[in-house]
Image (cartoon, rainbow, N blue to C red; front, side, top):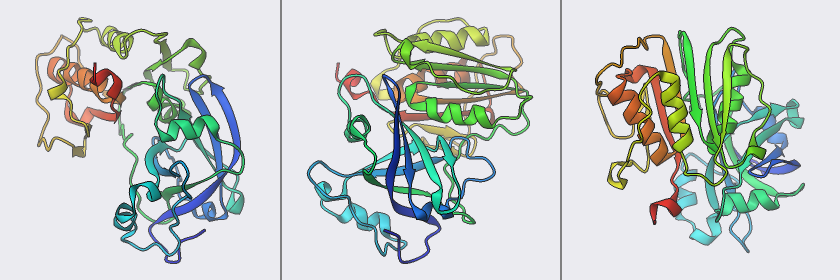
Length: 312
């Protein structure tokens, strides 16, 4: 299936060409389609976001044949059970070329109850088909937030949902890059081998049933030389669409407030932090309000909300 009009993006059915269980919480799928010959991710994809649409149980995959510029509104207008489920993912890698191009995506299978994407990932098999929206070569697409510019050091922080993005970023960094990475995952068996510059340290933090974000928060504060005090974040403080970057603020802030300094000079630091929204909110409070990092040095992204913990 290919759209009849040439949109500034790809909206295509793709087929699973390969499935690999990387660990208890990560499933890698390679997606193929002749239409991916027009995929545009050069020169670097970093944390490039794409959309995947999974079919609803018992229903066919929605068709986007002949889709025009109003494709999204048309999709939303379909009955909920017919339109499937749209989720955001990161391009983990690209292999092959031309009509043999494959898009590599790592899918997280969450602890406990999972949504349609996690269920699909658990059952994914060669030949399964989903719909993918992705950059088209030669057109602006957006979806990349990692933009450190001229920086002295990096701080990359994330939970399991951010691992694919961080791993992709690390592989594409200049070999002389310096910094630290902190990744929280459900289990020790989820620690993956990732390529990274020698000057960038990577620390994995398995929860093994512990509180989400606790070890991650403490490790980041220790790295920054700040007091490792716990931060209580009230549900009313959490922006469900938390997305704060140097160029965009989901809260509409003109500029981020700054607070007291803890005696460190963070002028050359660039921080990229993504994961569960409540955890990211707590880290944002410390880095921005307590340490006084400038808005242009940070990107905070709430990739998802832990609804189970929210209901407790």
